[in-house]
Length: 225
Image (cartoon, rainbow, N blue to C red; front, side):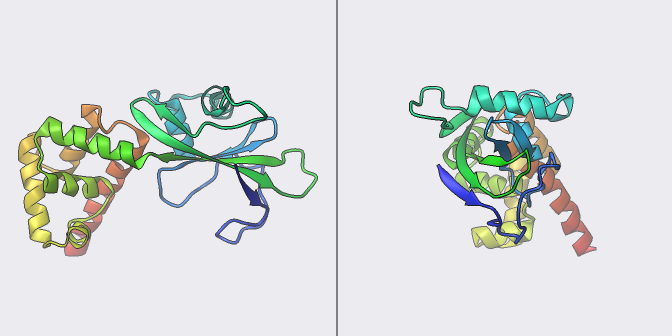
């Protein structure tokens, strides 16, 4: 288990702020939990709740702090470990697999809510590729079409996808049109909706990039006008 010391955050912030129940993390879909020595929740971010409450909707959880504390004990603790408290290395939420990284927090102070553990929940990249393979098989996508969809779900515009794939933006748009035909939709948001509805993209790790993709598409239209 790794150790974090007070004042070690990259943004230069010193100390921790236990009065805050939600931590704002710059855009990614990783879940974050800050716990005291008794595994009581001090702080968390929205992706952590979305990951741990699946298949329920996060906004339907009436007492998120209590819910997350319970889920930490039932899902994230390694009950088979002998010789002290330990967290699992990985776990599943629905059909999605996540890597659980835990850190011991070393900080000074006399506050009653002293953070003892920081837990990061990351989508397993191998599992993400498996989900994309499932999408490709279901809709009969070629490798390049699947690659285009992968970048599309990351919220990239046609120009950004073209740079990543080292092709022209027009070729990217051609791939997207072919995907639309195969999925029987007429818009990019239709592609996202089709994937989300298929079951392969219903986890927070896919759903949030889908939403980002819609926002970026609007930005692309705005820049072109």
